[in-house]
Image (cartoon, rainbow, N blue to C red):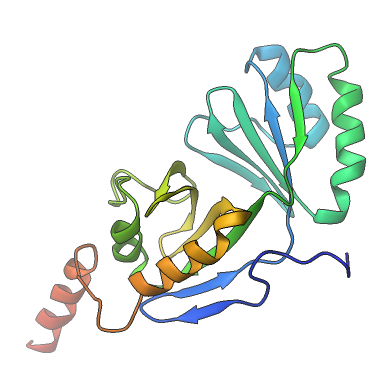
Length: 201
């Protein structure tokens, strides 16, 4: 693991939100028709339920994310990938399934702060409103001009995935969108209005 270098290692930006490049992450893409048999076998192997569309399931240091009707993304410790690949290939031997190690294909960023939704709304056409994008949900969309995935971990924290080759572009774009003075208060105005009202009581 000491020789593994995550994209944008150590990169961090502070503005309306914090943007932090995450360390190396094991990632295995699973492409298969999601049948009842598939759900049962995969759930038994991983100890995780299979997520419903646009959602994720998480347990300890592992998570399973819905990426498309026939695609799941398994997140796990980087060093655990070889053993897991072997177990998956054994479990699904003879199946029409694609099991692919994509650990080094993507960069990941953690975004956190009360202006999270406003910043995301500047860079993605996806509906980021609280009613449409709730904690635990996963969306695939765009980040400015590049493909991206968004996993909303909580009301004020998200994990963003982009291809490794555009990691710097994504980081710079997010940092610019989160620059001080760029407040739009679209998703934060209710909170601000409540605070203003209480200050005049």
